[in-house]
Length: 371
Image 1 (cartoon, rainbow, N blue to C red):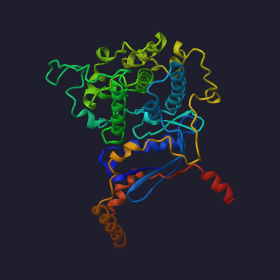
Image 2: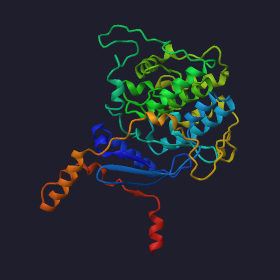
Image 3: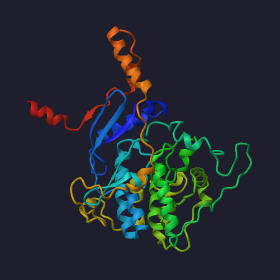
C-alpha cells in the first residue's frame, strides 16, 4: 500500500503527477507494469493498493551481488526495454526509472513501479520538477556559472572501483536512503530534465543506460558524494562519462551504454524501442518470449507473504511519514460544522483535484455477481 498526504502533494506541486500515477496504473493491463488493484482516499490521504512482488528490487540485488555478468545484465535490460516500451505506448514518460523501481516477481521477472513522477508525453515538463535539486545548481549549462564564467567540475569527486567493495556498498546505502527522502536521487536522471528546454520519452532510455552501466561496473556512471556533484557530472557527461580500467566491458555493451548516455537528439531509442532491440548487444534475444525463459535469479520464498527480499536495515534511518497536524484535524472538524450550517466548503474546494481518484480493478466482477 502506498499512501500520500494530500496537503504535501499540493504543497509540492505534485497534483498532476498524482493523477498521472493513478491513471497509468489504472490504464495498464501489462505484465511489465505493477498491477493496481484499488485506489481510494479519505479526508487527508490518498491510497494505492498494488500487487505484492516478493523478489524485492534490482537495487537490493545489486547491493547483494555487486555486479552482474553481461548475460544476466542482458536479461534484465531486455525486460526493461519491454517494460519502458509499454509505458511509452500508453503515452507516458516515467521520468524516474531506477533500480529501486524495477521490482522482481515470484518467478524472477521484472515489473516497473512507482509512477509518482510520471507525466503524459503531450505535456512539457513541470518547472517545479526536481526543484529541490535544481535550486542549488550553479547554472543549467554544463561548466558555466550564472555570470557566464567557467566553473570546475570535480570529475573525481568519488573514486569507486570493483576492488573497493566497501566504498561501493557505502555509496549504495546512502543512495538508497536518499531515495526515501524528499530530494530523491539524481543518479539516473537525463541531463535535459535539468535544463529547462523540454524533453520527451527518450529521457527514460538515458535512465536505462545508467542502470546498465551500474549492473556491469558496480556503481552509477555519475556517482558522487552529494546530489549536487552528481548533477554537475550529468550535465557535463561528455567529459565525465568513462569506464574504469579495471572493469572489462564488451565492445557491444559499451557502445549501447554510450548511445544511451548521450544527447537527446542522438540517443538510441528516440525513434522507439525497436532501435534498441536491434542493437548488437541484444543479438539473439527472443523479444516475444522473455517471460517464458528461466530468470537468472528466482526468489526462494517461505510463503506468499515472505518479505525477506526487501531491505529493512536502512529503514531505521528513514524519517516517519508526515502526520495529519492538529490544525488539519481541527479544520476537518470545522468542515463538518460548516456543512451542517450550510457555510462555504473550503475543504471541498481543496479536494477538487482528487475527484475521480477512486478505482477498483474488480468492479466488473462485483457488478457481474450482483446481477
